[in-house]
Length: 178
Image 1 (cartoon, rainbow, N blue to C red):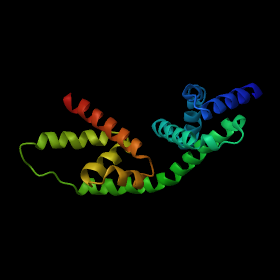
Image 2: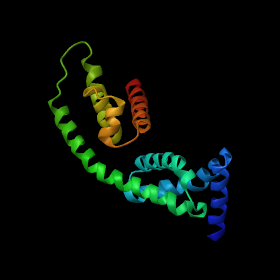
Image 3: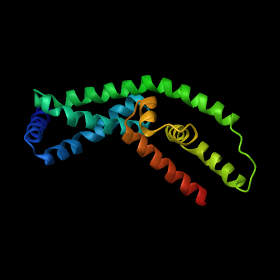
Image 4: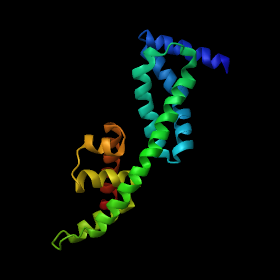
């Protein structure tokens, strides 16, 4: 364990000195652990990956201020835990949005026209998406929020919003082609 801390300290110092390869090594050593620790709290693999990614952004921005590089692991895990707990708190807000969107969807009636089968298929396919992707799709397309506004509402990065929107669109395309 002590050797790992020393090695992490060397990598942190190298990165602080401008060696970008040191960061790649830190990511290889820690990313899986970050995902596992986040999953332990949030119980959702996709969310855990998002949290790990967001945590790396914070780590990269603040690593130059780390005074004891050997404490990298504890310091970084604290960031992951904090982001995970923040997500759990925000998830309560998200659950309220899900309930509201389901009510709105029940009230949403598609007008009959030549595209009726496509619209019905699209709504059915949206319902099959994971909740986090459904929310982003609905907020973006039905409620016409911007990426920045969705980021604020869901308390996730704009990059995560873009990623969820992209993956949701890809699943929709794939499911609608069949």
